[in-house]
Image (cartoon, rainbow, N blue to C red; front, side):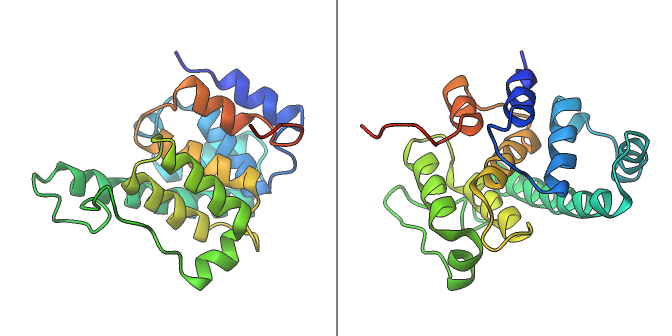
Length: 184
């Protein structure tokens, strides 16, 4: 069962802080369509978003971003479906390999977002192919650097594009504020 109320409460209560207008559209899409494959075609989605009062420029930004997400998810599914995983470099990554971030990625994502991606990956909840999609979509997102709140929405949207929902602990991590937490 999908728990969108947790995300809605987190956003309306300001737990995720301010999110950009494109991200408001993405959250709306996440909340109203159970999985990426349940979402209408982009043209029809654009009309629905317009009917819900979103501005044309924020709709266009979100649709372009979603189109990139769909393309990345489809190519990753294809790479993961091949027996030898030869279709993509990230699919064939060994357990002992390490991701090195480019200067552009470091600048655009910032230390906080890169640390969060590393945390999710080392916790075993963000496999390398999904990490690469998160990074690709984060690089396509506005912000210099991208805020942690926006990155959390990107992670949710990547799970959504695969028709998966993160388990409860990951969802809690994505929707809870980092402020006020004590490190153990």
